[in-house]
Length: 416
Image 1 (cartoon, helix red, strand yellow):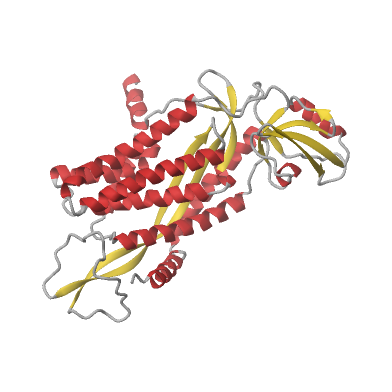
Image 2 (cartoon, one colour):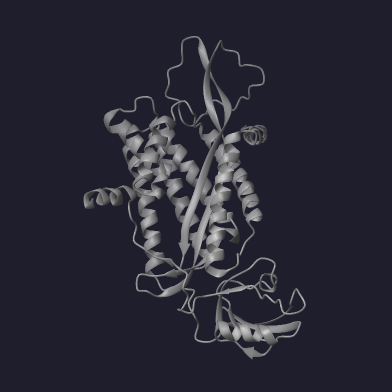
């Protein structure tokens, strides 16, 4: 019987030890800086923020730890080890690919290229193709889980100028997770007796063969080694809600990851499958991104001014709108009986509204009436809604075609 409880307890204990690694806190600080930059841009565009930076960092730490435990369990069950992982090849290649485009920093591209190099040219000689591809698959399964369970804090509203010059509301979906991973390290020990405290899993394990000849008179023992990793997710919701966009991305990524994992495991037994798995690794990932992006950018935008009322793009933390449960896409029709058809109408209605006031909104074709009150007495009143753009806004983000950094640099040299 598989010792699930003992294994998970051991992985959690090793995961906690990552918190004492200085590199983990450097990664968390970089993530925090990224969120701070996003918050600063949102303030510049709307004057307010829809989330708390402290909450953002704490949720990132929590979800990253959860993802690290899930990923570590999956990697341990299949038997992925550090011995022939090829990190010393994958990381430099990933950094080189990042010069072409930042999104190529993903291990799906570098890992797939290293695996193809091993298959076609037997270089690098000290890497194991099924091990590399399984690592990529498990990391993306973990990422799909984190994308699906991450809450609204990952959605940052923005005003987007499309290629036709039209201003529309949209959401920038960005998550970054520092990942405390626990990976196996195979160590050859002399004799046939297992060292004290060793956990016996079963003769069927590991699913992935190590691929290294054992020295005569010795046997393999696997140690759990904590390492610091990171995952990132960047997307855009234009034609759909942030939740729907995130769930679609998570489902598509899970299908890709599960397919890659199955091929990687089978390729350990059937070597001819390795080339198909290695090709799927980068090409399948790129196809997934291109299809998803095309569907989102070429479709009809969701957050545009309605025929009547004003549409809510997002709400602000600790305001009446957030406490009332107003959602992106809700249409505010009236406040205290005054019709609202533009931002100026809403400002007037807020100015003359009493301390307690009713609102009428439209959600999915149904009219709802809610009651609220101002948090403060006097002139300082904040309903806490961010409206979709009306078309005259001066600060916005611009939609542009993808540019490859190294190509732009070469063109600049040619102009000089």
